Length: 146
Length: 115
Image (cartoon, rainbow over all chains, first blue to last red; front, side, top):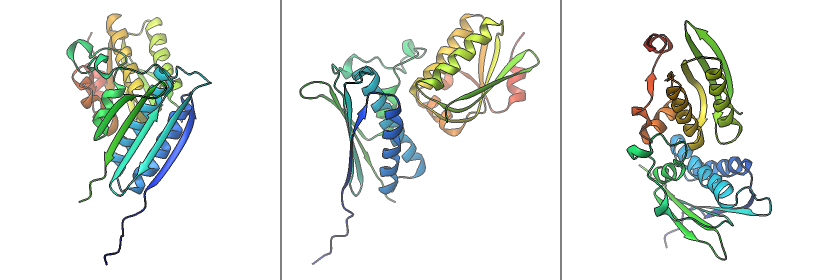
C-alpha cells in the first residue's frame, strides 16, 4: 500500500482588530505560510502583499476602523495551495462597481489599486456577502513546483 | 520600519531620499506632507530617490500619483530615480510606468529637468 507522504494541512485563524497594524500581522503570517508551501521569495512577497491589501480593505472600507468590529482571517496551507479568507463586519461591496484603475481615465486617481493588485498576485479571487453581514474575500494561490 | 525622508539640493533640483516602507498610514502621509512642504516653499523640480524603499503598497503608489499630480498642477515636475525591482514591477503592473518620468541614475535624472 502506498504511503501517504503529503504534508498535513495547516491552518491559522485570527480575529484581528480593526487597525492598520493588523495588516502587518496578517502579512507576516501569510508569508510564513507561503514559505511553508515552497513559494519562492518573490511569490511570498506578492502573496503577503495580496493578504495585506485584503486586510487593509476590511479594516478601512469594511469595518471603517470600528474598534467593536473584528476582521476574521483564516489561512490554510495544503500541499500545493494556499487559501485565505478575510471577513469583515461592514456593509459589503460589489466588485462590479469598482472602477478599473488602469483605464486611461482612472490612471491618475489616487486610490483604487488595491483589489487590482490582489487579483494580479493570486490565482483565484472571490467576494461574497458574509452572514449575517460583511464581505468575505477568498484568495487562492497555487504553489507550482518545477 | 516606517518611511524616512530627507531632502538635499542638487543645482535647482530638490532630491528627496526616501527609505523604508511607503504604506497606508504614517508612511504615505509623510510623503504627502513632504511634497506639500516643498511646493509651499516654491520648489518646482522634485526628484524622488526611491533606492532604499523596501516596500510600497497600493496606498503608497497612490501617494506617488498624488504627488505627481500636485507638482504638475503647480507647474512643476516630479520625477523618480533608482527604483527597486519591486517598485518598478508595481509601476509596470499599474501602468504608471508610462506616466512617470523614471531614471536609473541621479545625474541623468537631475540633468533631465528643463528650464
